[in-house]
Length: 273
Image (cartoon, rainbow, N blue to C red; front, side):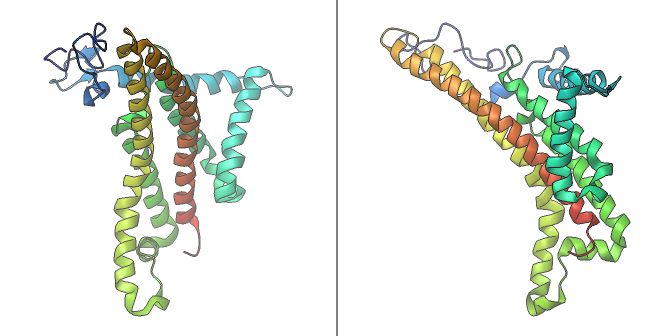
């Protein structure tokens, strides 16, 4: 193996079992990419995850623009797909969580979040890309921060300062002597733990899924030598299984992320907590 981990992010192509080298297990370097533009030590650089995030934006905006730029009473195939995706998020997540009256104005945001997260996840199984952008914590954290700021601002706007304090602390006089403890727990849970778990849930699932895909992919190549070929076949089957499983998880995580966002907004708008 190369002594410089920045030169080999996954594995060396001439490394096989029985060839004198150990198994090149995936590591942190599987998530670090050399800049496409600029230098890592400079104030600005542009790397593969940034490119994929930018492409995700272009894909989502471009698709919905083409689907609804000239809507027809009898929709074409692209418009039908766009309407199906829109209805899924609007009726299946937003309306179910927030109700039609409160949820209608947040449909554009939630639809954008769902498809943006989903496409960033989907890059994991796209040839040449093969990397989920959300496996880098900065991206889920930025999206969770948007939801967090929206939740805080809506709570202030709806309930005022006193109402906001009661909302985030779960103030309930019926708790009696345990009220201070309950309020303290709720305060840290809502203001600190909530945005953290919102981001980490998405990040951790995508990080783990990508690691497993890389692990079995490297193992398939590493075992492709002598009697190890039989085991390489098993490992390759696992690559296929994990790819299908990742397809499911990618959609589920986008769904869960938006579902939680809707739940937080609904909590901010609710009259009683």
